[in-house]
Every structure is written in C-alpha cells, then in structure tokens.
Image (cartoon, rainbow, N blue to C red; front, top):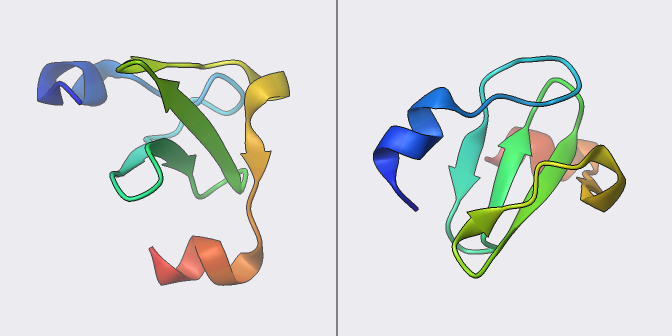
Length: 61
C-alpha cells in the first residue's frame, strides 16, 4: 500500500484516520469499527463493502 495514499485516505463515513492492516489487507476505522477491503492494491472505500469489526478486533490493533 502506497504511504502517500494512506496519508490522504479517511473513512468515508466519519472522516477519521484509517489504519492499514497488512495481515488482512484492510483499512481500519476504529471510530466506526469498520474494515475497508483492499483488492488488487485498490482500497474499496464503500461503506456497504466494509466489514464490521468486533470490539476485540478494534482494540487489538
């Protein structure tokens, strides 16, 4: 994932910073407990495509 792209991407729902999770190829929004997938090196920044995170997942990252 390109560092410059990570610096400008924000959560489309709440506009907070995203955290890159290399293990699962996801961008994590801790505020909304959502994980946006990265497919073919392209972040899918659609709320409908995001995965809901459990409290354990949010606080373990």
